Image 1 (cartoon, rainbow, N blue to C red):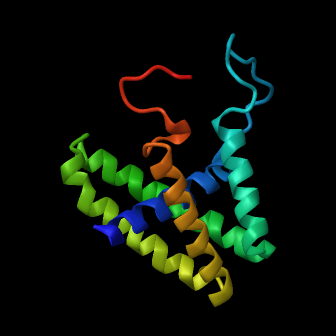
Image 2: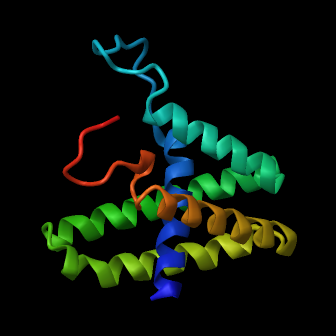
Length: 145
C-alpha cells in the first residue's frame, strides 16, 4: 500500500509540474469576479520551476521530462476513456502507467537527482497528509476557507 501511495504521489507530482508545458496560450483572458490571479496553472508552473531548480535539471532533461509527461497524460486520458468513469476498473491501468512513468523518469535523472526527487516526493506526501490529502487542506463537504 505504501509503495502504491509513493507511485501515485510521484506520478501526480510529475503530471502537475509538467501541465503548464502543455497549456496553449489563447491570449489575454479576463479573470472571473472573485477569482484569484494566482490560479492553478500559475501554481503548477511555480512547482515545476522549484523542482527544476532543486534537481538542477538541464535544458535537455527539462525537454525529456515534458515529453514524458505529455506521453503519460495521453495514456491516462486513453485509460479514462476506456474506463468510462469506473475508478475501480481504471486503477490497475493507471498504476501501470504511473510505474512506467517512474521507470522512464529514472532514465532521465542522474542518481543524485533521483535521490533528491525521492526526498521531494516524500516531503510532498507528508504535506498532503498534513492537509488532509487535499490541495489546500480542504476536506470533502467543507467550504473553502
